[in-house]
Image 1 (cartoon, rainbow, N blue to C red):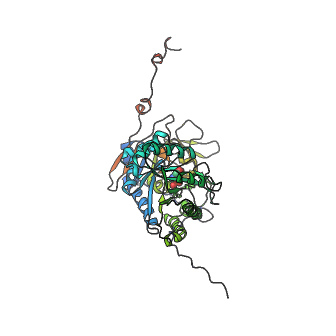
Image 2 (image 1 turned 180 degrees about the vertical axis):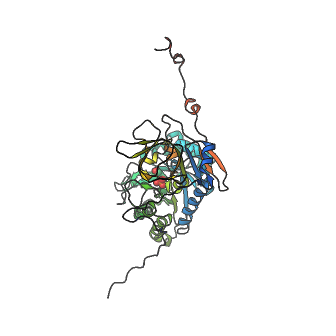
Image 3 (image 1 turned 60 degrees about the vertical axis):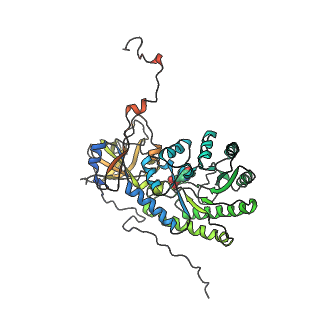
Length: 462
Ligand SMILES: Cc1ncc(COP(=O)(O)O)c(C=O)c1O
């Protein structure tokens, strides 16, 4: 008699047909003259080129889909918006309106969240570099500090002692799941015993109370089994330290890391097939968490809150970069080169993604292998090394997507100014959410010593 197969929970995963097979994707010319119903030509005429365009509808849809995926599978879920992914005030405000806390990794981001109106008690404070002054403010305002290293632990204890308080804290951990490279430079290592030592140090202190465990494994994690391993390791550690020290862990923060719908360089499947859907991440994570906490429930302890710091998967698809053609070139090897007015100064993520790129009108002529260069006088300024495009005219515009994650925070002001960012609201209204920079933006923090104000004291050079 054959062995009975174990029951496996059925999962519904969205599939899209007509995409690539192992021989690659079909080349179909696509174009889009508008974004969310607003003509691209009108956007450029009013706000200039290049231009970042955010769709509020997509931001909200993404936030809601993620929340729904997790909250329908696990009863206690909290999102903390990862500021570093995109800290434009308007973007953060949308996520906060959708119920997210703020997750910050520096004093600057902390101040930004506070300036936007986020109360301290809704801020998760991560990162390896928190000054004593920043810890003092965080403790005074009730923010949740997730400790990265022992020196921070000692400093925080000192701050709590001085404030005469017992401060609830969490620990960032790192460990090997067997699926991703362990980011061992952040937090306390589990395998070496460092993490348990830190727990003992906290639980022995009258000024600190351990309430949470945090782990951010990395980014663009395509294998949901990495999260299952992460949950199992975190839960195992939680049980161990609760038994040993009597602490009660109230939440498990699993960081970010979900892949967005971008084509990562080196991955040959299209993103629709390579990246798990939010529901697939949620299914793997919540099932693992429910299974690993059964004993806890039987013992009458509350389920830990599941905290997510999802960044790129929540924001990437909600923003586009529109750029215009400045010139066409024929390269010595025969390929077509196009010079655009946006480069890696604005689209930092072009270093690791093959961003989708779409013209804004139907193009005539045969598609050919094209290199898309940016405007910088720098050889590495390439937005796409190879993309099939029909001939473009000077003045034509191209829309790059998905660009919402890490570009508005990692962009650089190198030899040129950063352009405006607009948000298209759900009603179709277009608001500027970041003004285009001017010369004044760059020079106003500069100071010229008096002795340097006369440029050519000996007369104009020949
Ligand atoms: C601590 C922490 N949380 C969350 C994130 C967001 O990650 P992702 O954009 O991969 O979701 C990051 C990004 O590096 C991070 O360092």
